[in-house]
Picture 1 (cartoon, rainbow, N blue to C red):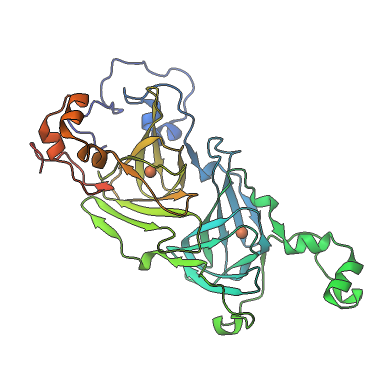
Picture 2 (picture 1 turned 90 degrees about the vertical axis):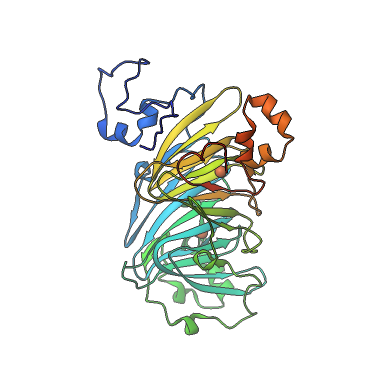
Amino acid sequence: MSSTPQDDRPAASMPDTRGADIIGPRNPAREAQDPFTLRPPSTDKGTIPNLKWSFADSHMRLEEGGWARQTTVRELPIAKEMAAVNMRLRTNVAREMHWHKEAEWSYVIKGKARLTAVDQEGRTFIADVAEGDLWFFPGGIPHSIQGLQSDLDGVEFLLVFDDGAFSEDSTFLITDWLAHTPRDILAKNFRVAEAELAHLPSKERYIFPAAAPASFAEDTMAGAGPVPQSFVHRLMAQEANRMPGGSVRIADERVFPASTMSAALVELEPGGLRELHWHPTGDEWQYYIEGEGRMTVFGAESKARTFDYRAGDVGYVPYAMGHYIENTGQEPLRFLEVFRSSRYADVSLNQWMKLTPPELVRSHLNIGQSVLDGLSKDKHPVLPPGPQPSGGV
Ligand SMILES: [Fe+2]
Ligand SMILES: [Fe+2]
């Protein structure tokens, strides 16, 4: 708990005259993960919708050598702009050749995989990806994913789609299409006798153990040349914007031009704060990779609600709502902020206040000049733990 003496937020161990003990049924394990749901800070108010989902509560689709689970509007109804799938493929296990209407943005959580795609001009794409890499496939572009040999036996990754109603179970699969096309048409289309198609799968494969891939060079197809912009971005090779309290890496059209979606990978030291801000372009979809954190979302009309998150959880911030994220654990907190917009954008409360005439700001908030002196005209998305020294810096 990172509460400070100035902090009036209740902690579970703090005496509090509000409320009373629970004498009915309890779920202590669940309560322990959500202390600020059990005892919300006094600043929380009103009916902000639920902004938290844990992949641990998602249905697991188990297949031979892999699994998939999803967080969509069916799990988290407020998440209308984006949905996500968490998927695991063991070595050589393939996510079947497929496409879908939605754009697919991905983060490799652990392990290694090989990707392939072909675009509408017949240009090819192949890449091997590892932890921290991003990929992006535009809507309608066919692609495949295959787990590669690694000390983790394949790969686990996160997929974020630009429509909250997306379903991983309703993508366009090559086996499914061929199983539902008359065999004589297939024979005509492929210019072969029907007998040569006798062993086509009768239903979709989706996730299945495939033959081991050839070498990267052998799998690089000759054809109309490569896609003009890589569908992969090596996020960890990108220099982080480091500052006291943590770091930020922003991946948007400026460094990953193939992607129509953008993201930030944020790391907060224990007690560090992702400063109060909002996003002027749309909803924010969050994935917590490591550690424990807390977010309060302000929704206007005096509404605010606080949520606790930990590794494996999903958070969501509706368009324009103000929020902060605090690392409440003992370890670093790492999370992704993902957006449907191609350019990352946020508005900093501190910067807004610093760049507005000070007398005007002071007369709004009844604060001394020292508060404004402590702010910076530059944006500091991450702030270190603890208050500034008295009188600012
Ligand atoms: Fe896909
Ligand atoms: Fe944000």
